[in-house]
Amino acid sequence: MKKLEMTCPACGAKGEKQIIGRVCAGSLDEPTKRSILGGEFFEWQCPKCTERFFINSPFLYYDNAKGFMVYLVPGFNKRSYKVPTLIKTSSEYDTDSSILRIASSFSGFVEKIRIFEAGLDDRVVEAVKLLYINMHIQDGGKEVYDMIFENTDENSSLFFGVFLEDDDFEQAVPAEIYKNTAAEFAPILPEEVHDNFVVVDQKWLRNMLGS
Image (cartoon, rainbow, N blue to C red):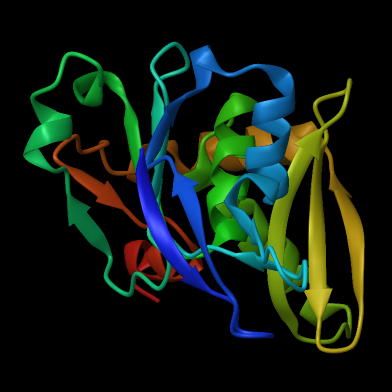
């Protein structure tokens, strides 16, 4: 844990925020986990005007039991990040058996956690997004600016938030489409690497497909 000296952007008052740089999913109680995924965990409240602000600070979320690590690095603009020696050599982290992802935005960070907790492959999820976006445009729909996985239901259908320029809505995708997409893409999906946190998004998918 470290302490950040804060200055309120709204009123200029000074304060401080104790932040944690990493957390193990297995050690979290439900209220803390909800606050992480909901964003409250990363907020600072000004002691004078009480306005709340999001703290853009690197944060590592790891789940050794489910085999994934998601690293939030706000503003990250590269495609991969070498696993720091401290993490790679520590017995606390099982990098050799984990899927390693990096996210530059909070929404991307939360999405990755939700995907892996649902037992899904985020690379296949990106392929499902591309299929839906292409179908949406072919059917005369407006350009899709973003599409974010939210959850699954009792039938294993996938639910996404779909964001257009002037609208947004929830879209359900049947589990069968995910399964078929996984089978189709399985032969071309690269092996997971364990020395780097990597970005897996639509750009990654297009690069892999050579398009």
